Length: 263
Image (cartoon, rainbow, N blue to C red):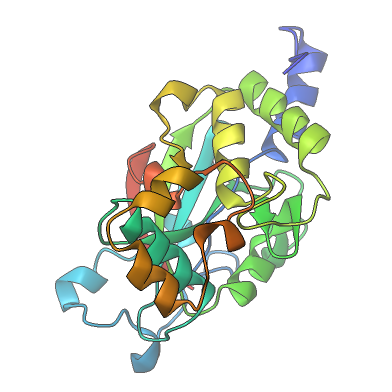
């Protein structure tokens, strides 16, 4: 970004305030943030991950498990929920398979961060990113949980210096804040556009390491005819209004794995 906080004490305070209100770009939130801020959400049997063993379920975490240091930002990658077909998550998963990615398929990404100005439990955690219907920062995770209820998110920890957080937030507010969400164009305002852009500005992603799948690649991919028939599309061009796209699966190894959350 153009400017970052100086090393002076006042600037450091401002940098922390801007930064922590900064970027996170979620994928998402799950098991917590209810009656008391540290409360662990209890699960009904029908909410537990499908097909999971008790050992699998032991890998699920709550927000109280996540460190809340000034440099902590979390990438949330939401998994496809195959039990309900013909939804956005299934479309993105099918397209990711067409592009050569493998299970588990992720269909949405957000950056999440602790809110330094919180006044209660509902605003303890915030997200930054692009999601239907708009791109926004400081989006309460309690609202995110409602929007993505029933989905599982993989949580990955990023360590981002405050000055880099401030730079990433400035980039987001300049180019994405308030823009309408477009999953596949014409504007570059989907969840991975936000997550990758923020990651690059924050210094945790190298643009050269991020694969962008082109429209031509998808159009020539093996199995494209079955994909088009399944989704009743005449061509890839009908849905993809941009030259290339980044699938959430491309981010599966970014940062440190912390566990999974059930929304």
